[in-house]
Image 1 (cartoon, rainbow, N blue to C red):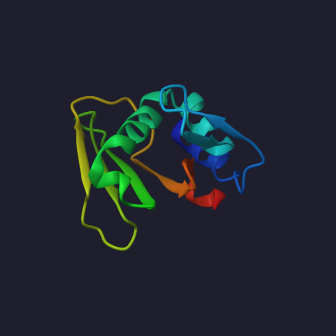
Image 2: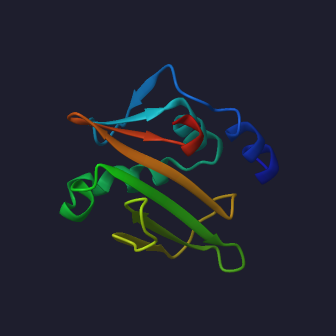
Image 3: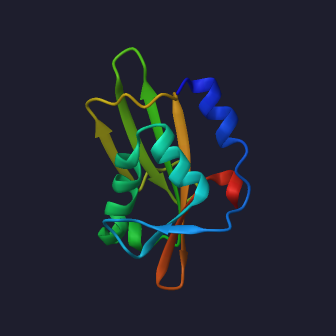
Length: 125
């Protein structure tokens, strides 16, 4: 899917009536927008990266997390960072040696809701 088409379709997600359990981390539920992003962009790996940090003490203590992927199109490399949303100081950073993610950047949020975590697009809040 071309970047402009993907962005246009992502902009249509506001709220979410259903949540899908993450296959690898059952305590993480994903909204319709995140599921669409993973399928349309071939980026299930992105939801896996975010969910995989649930067991990292640095991330687990943050009840609201902002996950941002930034892609350098000239090198096809990327960087994923997680902040608490109040500061630009990264709590978690992961470098990607290669990615074919179609957008220059994307942000997803991870919010604790009791014993579960909800992964959502900022527009779905």
